[in-house]
Image (cartoon, rainbow, N blue to C red; front, side, top):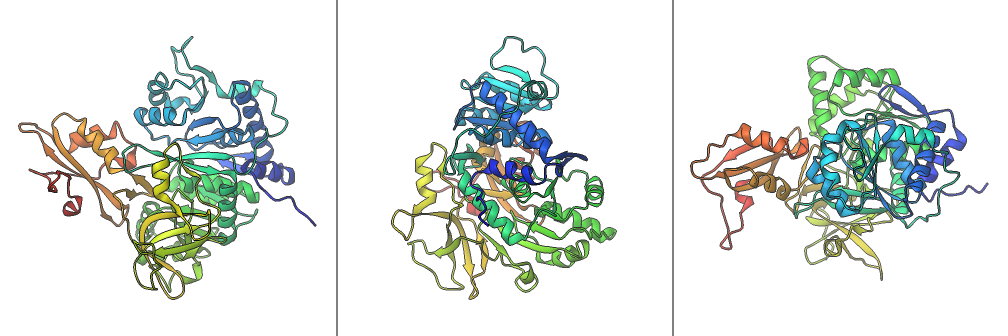
Length: 518
């Protein structure tokens, strides 16, 4: 029998709802929401967005904590043919303002609890016409532009959109902002077809189906968190959506109550779990899949994780926002090849090339390049940066993605990460631009010079370290530096270490030699 293929991200929701309308799509902070409810809410919000002038290709920003409303907003934006831009709720006003201006968002969907950060950004985003605010409205905004409305009231009052507005698979679906070497975040452009393909490939190698109950503790702004939602809806599973792992005992209780079968995490989460387990043994037998990406897991965690999750397959993976996922290690090989991140995901290919573009032999270091339908379209309005990452491929007209990271490959074709070739720091599964942190440091009175580097950290993968030269007579302290950064940066970007130096090593042209600081 012929089955209509899934081509658009929003089709996954409409198709799944047609099959299992009353099944729980989400359990958001303990409250279940059916697929019928998710689709109905998304369609009403999609109609509200079109009523407010949102058209195909327009950007709509979502600045919310993980919630049912956030998930519904993502699908609403897709249903009206627009582009969703999910912003981490930890993002402060200045960076939010940059993103709103850069992507020219015309609507912001936000949590009222985040108004302290989004209100200062509104006046400087000229394209922004409306804010749909979930929960309490911020006071004192009568007559101000952009107009702020209460999200739940708008959804309740708006008849549902009958059908998705016209769009096709190579239309832009999302801008995913990630840290860049220039200090400002850059928007990774992902089409519907790239994201549908990536989700399908992940589902295939993770061996997922509609019977799974997938936990998500990661922000939906982080592509690792976002794809838990996309995959769950694609196969008709249930997503158990939480805001964080800040309260481990609460999370463990939710896993048991909801009978979670898929546990995606990053090394910080697993380090906390292993530490808890070594003090008082844990056992989560319902979990059948454990996945890790971002930084590598310490190999000595394998035994602990097998004890905590006795029935689970453990997947070690590597990826980057520009193509979602690159490779994974078959769980049957985790103990045999503990240092490997495996082979290319299904339907794609990886290449290791020398600096001059020649293939390298097994065991020789090379720069990772990726082929496949899951590659980004480019960086939003940054053609030069796009050309640096998307190179001419082996086939006429083909583009391949240059990850920039160094790997080796064994005789079986499994990859082993060696190191990064740029200054970007990967900590807690997130990318941190040293320049962005340095700019914040230079805004602190008394800082003459500053350099930010990543240093190895078993818990974080890399920890952010700031090395500062103070102005003569300045009375700077590490605590003052950290307080200043905490007020201007997301939590994961705030330095873990602050060191003061009398001078920083420099090249003959005055550039700081960060390799010596490491």
